[in-house]
Image (cartoon, rainbow, N blue to C red):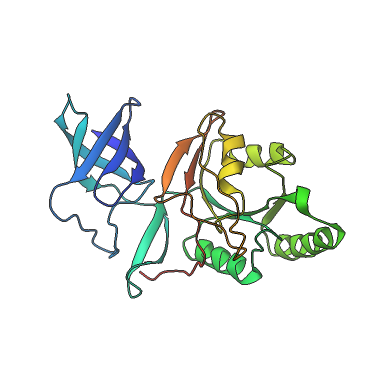
Length: 245
């Protein structure tokens, strides 16, 4: 049977087959791809072929990964000389950024955009926490918006806390598979809670002593959007650098 990978924990995978049934999948032996070497051969978003291991326990053995039309990777957090595939088969990527509490650097945004371009994934930049912005922050946002839109990127200003500016975002996400990333603490989980009500994504406040967010997501995971489309939520990352082949 064919199935879509919804979550990867490193050794076990959450799969959804073409009938919508959920399976716990694993590989038997080492699964290799001809043209890619990475710390994780199977990624969220992969379409895999598998065989039923146990109907009772709803487990399956993954035997093959179907061809990926694209993917995004980054430097492995554990092995600096290797790379880690963040997600595969994407329609677009979305970076959640903030101008304060915590501040997202322009360098981080640019690295994310470069990685998206490298793997031919259209990117969207969403600035969250607009309810916290003062006049000088809005002026900065307008400058950055003009700069990024001039080179072809869609830029939005939203507030997950106040539920503002989200209708246009929902339209951009509809019927597409979207990778969502951003620093910990930018309100990514709160934003996804609004877009996908009932999912109850965990949220944490920004660390007071450092001004940096705390991690709330351990593994990449795919979710279905009620109005159509899918979101791949990724761990909050302090740094983002394009990985190699």
